[in-house]
Length: 204
Image (cartoon, rainbow, N blue to C red; front, side, top):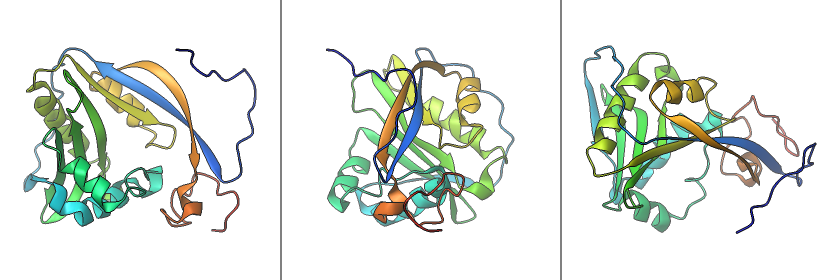
């Protein structure tokens, strides 16, 4: 199958669209865990088909300023089907009753696991919780009979995300460009979301 390829140079986008550079990373053996500082009062709460409201709230809290929108445009039934699938493990990282992080592992492709979503609310970034959550992700993924664990990050993600994934044992293998509608113009994110990304065609 022939793949569409961009020519060298600049490519104007359709009105209302954004371009996102996506880096795909993978590992084929489980790495050693990196040390994580102990934090009291942490737990993981499983999110399933009955927790779509909680999932959406946490998804927004983690991803609003790094342009997460893919789950916000899904119909309720579609979201419930994903997080309720027995081959999908979705968790909220909870401390003192507050949801601080999101972890989703997708085992629906045999022999593989995708780290579908991984992130912390902004106030928890830099506290060591990300390392603890990654160690949990690695343990849960490699507890299954998989031969590949993969993730993708993008130019809208936290500036330290790519380096964090590489320190965790993932290795880049492909770069892609994703063009999509600006979710702030479609109403799926508020106009003030992701202020580091210019809003063209709308107002702040």
